Image 1 (cartoon, helix red, strand yellow):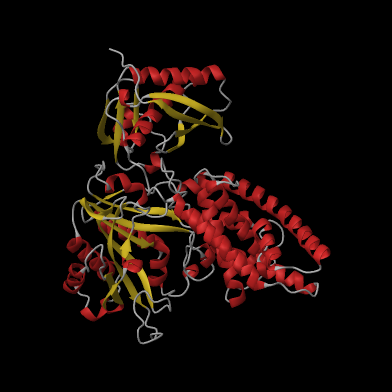
Image 2 (cartoon, rainbow, N blue to C red; image 1 turned 120 degrees about the vertical axis):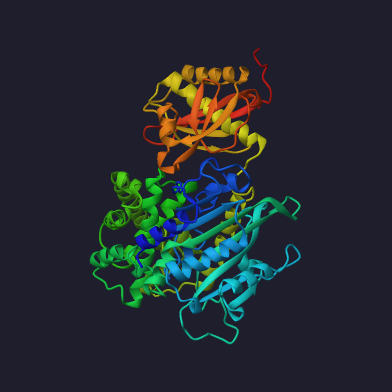
Length: 594
């Protein structure tokens, strides 16, 4: 089965079960400072999982672009990826376990034609926080999975969330495909890493909220949240049990690398490098299309790391000159029909990749100079030296060892690995810190800032002209950041006028109202809507008095007087033709006009 067929079958199945399709959100989270990228299909739905009504109702489904870098060191095997597509369906306080389990069994066995004897499932074994999930196990038996293929595992395997220290979470049930291999040991079962069992779907029963004290409280609204990876399921249903890269999603790019390197993918020595190049440049294409450029911070740093890692492995394969653009063009051709945004951004993608590749090739030369300096000065090459070359210049250990060998030196690989582990641990802690507040904040402060962005947007259009439109935003409980299109630097007087206008509308205490309508109707009413690819057929339109009218899904106050006084603290460039404003609430209350 092709990926295209899988996507169509999944969405058609759930549309037939009363769900509404929502479009894929950008990889860059909107108004969520807790994470760099969208990493799961449920991520854009957090407000609705917490109880806010969704404009399309209580049954939803989607194909969502996702990006995870947690497993970057595992990329190179047959099934780990940084960018991937996640099929998902949701019940927002509607159906519960029984209906979801029967839907899962029906889709797998009747739509994907997977023989039921090839399926095994796992359920939550229970602990001090939540009981053993016998209900789910009995429902699987009722659906058609015999008791001997139902396993119970602990929280590490069969519990989802919360994404941070607090938030929605619950037990899950995972579905596995049996490849037919022999068991690696008598205790081999789903969850074992030997390759006999391949996870293809996960049903999360989101029924608890973990509070700040670490207690698990029942959620007022129980939700279903599922996830099925397009790449993995396409591979399984196509017969490529060990290698996602042989599916049509990756194979054209693999063939392009074979041409560039004059090497054969089938040779085991070449597979890892080719897989890393394809995976990382595929990810880079989508990140660039969503407006990120390589840099040393945040999303730009991840993009730079992935691109440079791809270049490193290209040189390891012996590819001469620049090549990232050639691979990127193949990715765009392969996936552009599903994600037209990568076609529209093609010129930008190729330009940025070329610039970054050129920068890194120069960095590689500097790394070679540093290597020679280490050797000439100390006559040895320590593991710490090797790690410095790896971290600073992107030198793989294998390259450093090979160069050292040519100079009749050895590298202390144990010392290198120790430094690498310390580095990875710091990175892991840093990633966990990013998630410390959960996936998104929906507090009163967040709602005030969110509403303020609408006032700021309209004020900018009044002062600078209608060429201004929002291109991004990021909100915390301490400040707002607002990105907008504008071709030149505004003068100080213009920024001051914007601030005065925003505070005037706050003083007027304008009512904030919401109405659900079709996107077409919203546009007829001249509603601001600059992210059309992210909207479904029904949208929420927020009106602030007669001043502002905008399509939005975030939390809002009920009247502008609740916001308080806004102070613009910084205005700067954030890319070609784009400006960025930072603002803070400096006074919780303003005198309200009569």
